[in-house]
Image 1: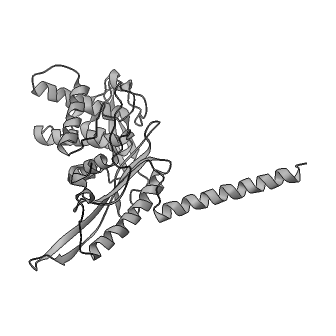
Image 2 (image 1 turned 90 degrees about the vertical axis):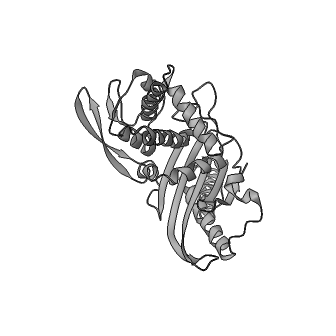
Image 3 (image 1 turned 60 degrees about the vertical axis):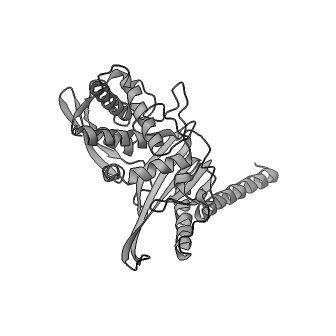
Length: 326
């Protein structure tokens, strides 16, 4: 028979657990963040509406794949290589630890388009590596150079980061795992800059807005259909339409969430009717509940944004703008 003291302690522990759960729910609802780094920026004004620890360098896990997809899409635009081109999975790609959601095997062939879907929707590390190897090899060939195609691709990722003003970012691989000699690092502010470029690219958004996608793997000459499921649990909640999740032992739970609201017609200084668009990007790094925090932070940042609009869009400090955030 259990002693009364034990029963009392058990009851106290249960009440404490319930209280902790209630507090955590209230924190998400109120927008309170327990993540290591958060930032919320409205895309069209580059105005920072929330920020904490956004300039601290830290691992961002699979969020690095946003840069992987952008480099591949920019390369395809320049070279005009069709995205229905088949890429062959090499044994080296299979040596990458972590997610292989498609169960790819050496010799499998997958279109570049489907590799992009797997990279962005399911954060498949093997798909990201196979995509980078194909694009990197093409880049080396066009430049008449030899060398490691993955390294060539990562160089392009870092060029993209530099071009977008991501001064505190260093990519070391196309998948975001912390398994390279040099730790891949970025910041919340830098990932927000990357996200703002990403949402400006309609082809990129096409790969992040779908909850499911049917793809095909060609194995030993035989097509094998497969359906991918997007890992972004916030997709379709309200007007949330992207963008990417990530979770590694070093990064913790990470997410870039983006939401666009219906535009509004307003008069500009010249008295002309102008359509003003509204899109928010939220970056959450190192969270035990990235989905809950991102949703709460979106709500809080939209409230701040609406209040800012009512005040006439004042900007009193250059640090309020993401373009100059350091």
